[in-house]
Image 1 (cartoon, rainbow, N blue to C red):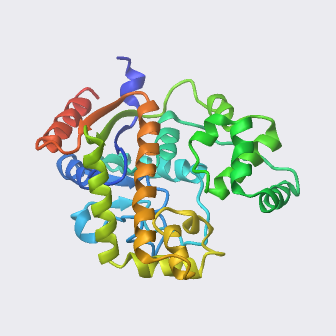
Image 2: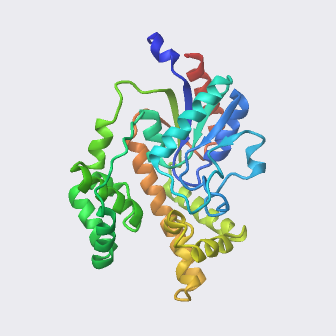
Image 3: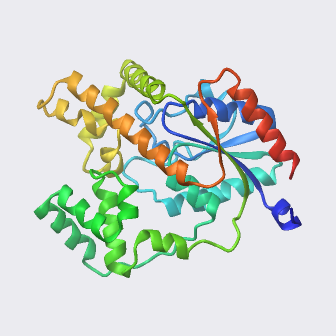
Length: 316
């Protein structure tokens, strides 16, 4: 292994679908290896959205610093380019203080873009293009708009939920502004060398049913912890909180507040949406190279992760 590889900052990432225990494992690794956590979750950045985002609680941090949590108010937008820039600063700072950066979260685009060193260029969309696309969406509806994205950029479409209008429009805007698919931009923007030497630990359950049971239980616990009040807060501010209004955990309850659906039906919809999201997360991380998968339900999962991390760091 060459010296330039060893000179790169070391980063350990804990990834996987929702409800697999990433937060707890990240804290355990940080305690053992003098680490600090960088959140790789696109929703936990928002202040006041705690229950629906399964945000780490002060008790769960066990005193370990968690960066990239509670940094923006919900009306602000935050892109993958914003994340890679901010996380890069965190890594530099944490490493400079002699600590280990631990990237923990389930937003695959964030993790991959950071670890692969994707460079984002600010492209200027032609004036009026966003407005034109928005009008198109209003005229033909989200399903037809998503089909348009599938036609021009199937890879980007596969990574975006059909109901996520913001991201569908953004991907179409990029294509119409540049003539290039987002996937092409990603390939063009990769550096010759990756910026970090990394160990990526993936958590999953061998039996899909075990993961789904965990997800259903988590939703029930969220409701007990006050999810409904938080969802109503997002619903009342849905025009300003554009990102949160599209997020799983909130939008499923909008019909309840509009008195068009029963609470039980909305809860079941959230469980189903969360299970579907977990499948998309798994698909994303399975396509990433170099992920070491661990059985999240194994009694020795923590010991295995500690040993793998020790081995990785000792090679540095």
